[in-house]
Length: 254
Image 1 (cartoon, rainbow, N blue to C red):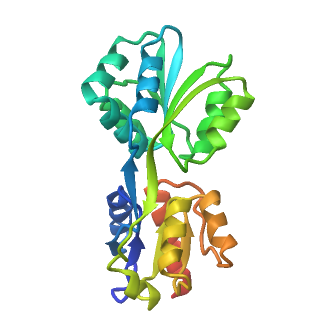
Image 2 (cartoon, rainbow, N blue to C red; image 1 turned 90 degrees about the horizontal axis):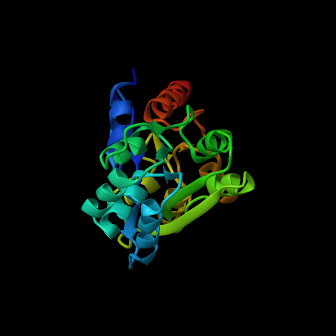
Image 3 (cartoon, rainbow, N blue to C red; image 1 turned 30 degrees about the horizontal axis):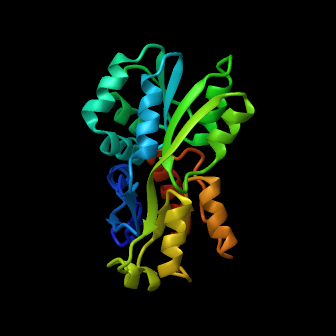
C-alpha cells in the first residue's frame, strides 16, 4: 500500500482514465483525472461509409479494432443501426481487438468471438493475425495519428487492407486545471498511453518534475526524444499491469 502522504498519480488520456484509476485504487494509489487531449470525430463520413460497404461485401474478412475510440467514431459516422445490421448480415466476418476493453466495444455491436492478443498492444495483435494462415482482408477504422505497426505487419504478410480515418487526436486548447500542479511537481507520477498524450503533456509541462510512465515503447520514444527519462515501461499496457509497475516504482522511491 502507498503512504497516506503519497501524491496522486495524474491520468491525462482523452477517455478511459477510469480503468487506470480503478486499478490504482485497488493498490491504494490515488489519482487525478484531467485530459490533456481530446478525440475529434472525422469531419465527413466518406471513409467510414467505404469501410461499411466493405463489411457488406462478399468474402471472408476481419473487422480489426485498434481502440475504443476508433469503434465509437466509426459507429457515430455510419449510424449504430447500419453498423449492427452490416455485422449481423455479414458472412465469414471475424473480429479482432487490441485489448479487452476494445473487444467489448465490438461485442456491443454484435460480435461474439473476438480475437485478442495476450499482450494488449497493436504489435502483438499484428503478430497474431499475421500468423493465422493464409492472407485475408482486414477492415481497420483508425485515427489520423494511429501507429503503423499493425497495418505494416499485415501488409508484409500479404493481407488486403481496407483502412479509413474516423477520428483525430488533438491537444486541448485551454491549459488543463492540473498544469500548475504538474509544473510544481505535485504528482507522484504521470501515465502516458499514447504518443499524442505525451506530446500534449510536454507542451504544457516541458520540464516535468515527476516520474514519467509510458504504456508502450512508441510512447516512451516521444519522451526520450524530448530529452527526458522514462521511469517505467510496463511489460503489458493493461490497467492492472500498469498499476503494478507504478506501485513498484513508487515503493522504490520511498
